[in-house]
Image (cartoon, rainbow, N blue to C red; front, top):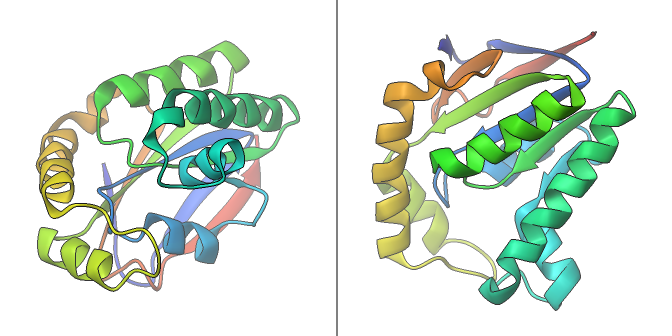
Length: 177
């Protein structure tokens, strides 16, 4: 696992499947918008809204993730970077995405956004629109702690850890292949 300091860089090749990993409220979507291009980021919330007219409709979550993986596969097959913006705190979700990358034959990158529970809860409370239940965030943060302990051994080509103090100043360096 590579710890990325404030002002540090992420080096990612194209095509690559990039998974953002972090609890709700950790700033994944904000980080993705700042670091990646607008067409590179595939948000599970956005896909949920495309299907059900609402990011909050959890009943369409399976279909939303099918759409996420469909778009990611199309981007990867076109030689592009595909960034999956979802919590990805469960190994089973990461495994499905790793399987997709293996099927297409591309590099994989995990970016673990290691933000404290207190910061996640504060960000969640200040959100416009959808607010996630506190217990859900507490559970996701506990899952994140377990994830950080073994993310290196899951088969990603690169694993970056970015803490809450570095998120606003990290930059991206792209390379082909």
